[in-house]
Length: 181
Image (tube, rainbow, N blue to C red):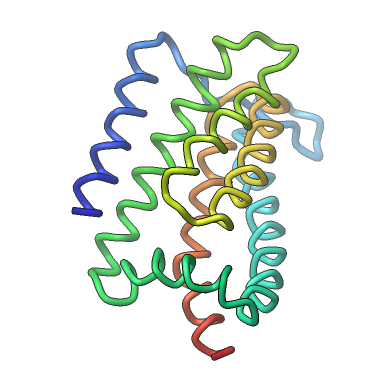
């Protein structure tokens, strides 16, 4: 049920974003001063930084059962299910969330409060999962992807950042938590 529900939710985000209007990929500045480069390197660097911070946090949560158990429950989909399918879900859902929250919703909110409001709304959507640390992760990821959207003017940077972080967490977090048992 987890697989179908998550793919279904990604479909809702993607359809909502696509019918909202045009979505722009955005651009980044290069060292040579060009501004028409795609924001891939910057997003990957931010994803790497975020992965390091969250892996360090995993050491702390591994010692607190009330925080570790909901995370373990969520990660069990990857541990005991099909890792390939879960990875595909992570990629499709990451793309869908960014198309919607940093694409359509961000554009609809207006320039002044788009980063903070899209972050709050994105964070609130994760509460239903029942994993407190997922809510915290959504707040941090939402803020960084929102800032990435503002800086680059498009959705490519947030998508790369989101997939880089969530894909890394999928593979690293279970190993870290298992090693610290």
